[in-house]
Image (tube, rainbow, N blue to C red; front, side, top):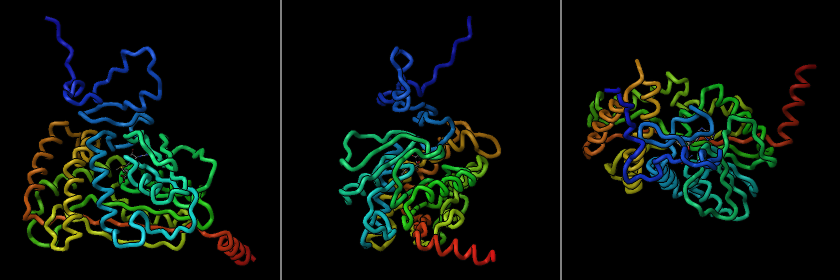
Length: 346
Ligand SMILES: C[S@@+](CC[C@H](N)C(=O)[O-])C[C@H]1O[C@@H](n2cnc3c(N)ncnc32)[C@H](O)[C@@H]1O
């Protein structure tokens, strides 16, 4: 008997219509439709703008996790003047959100500032077909030369850990610097993938720790390190930003904290975890798992154990997150600096 061709079970993923790729049957398939449709691997959908550009799935499951992350960030700054960003931007006209994902942040900022144009850019188009009239979503790779004609007053980035190599980060911060108006601001908030516990409730070799350490190692193996929260400040300084501030957060995993805000934060972060973790691990571990790439099944077995850890209300796990914001020097400050250089050269 002839050897049969193995069928990809993910191709049919019953009940998830958007996963079935019928592009091949169309005579009018365009580049645009492939960008919308994405590419499917290990049961998840990924962007097609640049092969291997991002570990992050672009599908409903991951968008749900991003939404929980958005609400978590807003909640923890709910008592500040502006829970969406901390940079003291004056009279902004143009704002850019890099790696906008589902677009939650860009949409909320556009709602908050109806006279400002807010652009969100990502490798995959965000879901949903309604946007505030002053919000524009664009599909593009931010590592390419930027083609926007206007400069920005604020550039925002959130949860871009593992998106770039250290050299790409440097290039991106330089592009941001170049494309901000003098006196304009950059702001970034990132979570730490590493799990913490301040008492003895978490076993140091539990599945959560094993999973986060394996994903962290895979990021290193790919040269897309996941410690962005520790490196972004220095990268901003290197690009020329001044007046840099930072704020640290603790994200509890689960509603175990006594403080009502942290309790709610824990619920949201728990939801971010349960909906997000497969996407966080699948691409990195199946491609860059150490010592050798993992199979999809190996990832799923560990994730099943992680899910059990997440169900245990007695384990007090939490993660660090950090927000950093800095300013491009004003024209006046730039002038003073170049005069200094001339003086010291004399
Ligand atoms: C973890 S998601 C965060 C989404 C959003 N910032 C949020 O906080 O909800 C990271 C996003 O960065 C996008 N991304 C990664 N590399 C990119 C690139 N080179 N150009 C544009 N977007 C990129 C991914 O497609 C993904 O949507």
